[in-house]
Structure formats: structure tokens, C-alpha cells
Image 1: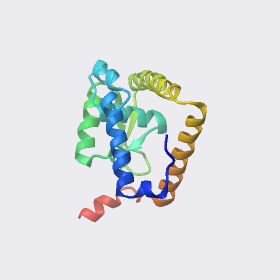
Image 2: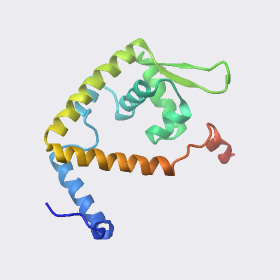
Image 3: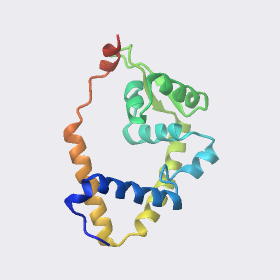
Length: 167
């Protein structure tokens, strides 16, 4: 294993990272450790990620859910519509601002998200099991560093601000 240097953030370093991620992807899908569950549940990745986000953070506005999934407002509406029809989600309008639409898990959605969480924990545990203790520490240190850097650069816009900008 070679040491990482400043040269690794050069275009060659970016190419090396990309190449390693492609090599890993040839062995296993890096897209999502829940692909088998999605097939069994007949859900799309966006639907599964919606359940995971709502389990993780509780009710979210449609705008926040759209941002987290990386989809448009129109697309998130379709995702939520299908999950509502499946009995996994419910929409609500908070009393303090009836213009806002929040989405929450139903009892069925909470059950599905618990099963998904158990599967995800198992898959991540297996992944971590392939690494040495030192490599796990390094991985956590790197991910925590990235999260800190991203948190310092990201300040969410107030809800609805992106809609005003479009007008």
C-alpha cells in the first residue's frame, strides 16, 4: 500500500480515486447496499432512501426531502405519492404554517424502515469486517473530517427560498 501525498489531489490523484472506485464497483455495486431489499419490497432507491431519512430524522418537509434525495420538487412529489399509496407515508400540514407539507412514516412505514435499518447494519458490518482495526479507525477519521468540512461549508437556505428564486 502506497502513502498518500499532496500529488494525490492532482488530476492523477483524482484519476486514481476514480479508478479504485470503479474497480470496487466491478466487484460489488457501490450504488447501494440495499439493492436486494429494494427488489423484495418493489421499491426504488429513492423510495428506500426516503424511508431511511424519515426514520433517521423524523418528519421532513417536501423541500428538505427533495434536497436530501437530490431530486426536483416535482420528482419528490411522485416518490411521496407512491409511498402514500403503499401505506408507508402520510402527509401533514403543521398548524404553524399550513402552506408547508411535511411527510412522516406511518406505522407500516416505520416497520419497513426498521427492517431496512437491520439489513443496512448487517451489510455495513460485513463491509467493516473486511478492514483491519487500524483501517476502520482511519476510515472513520477520514469520513468525520469530510463531514466536518462539509458542515462548515454548508448552510441550508430557509425553506422555500429556492422557490422564490425561481419566480
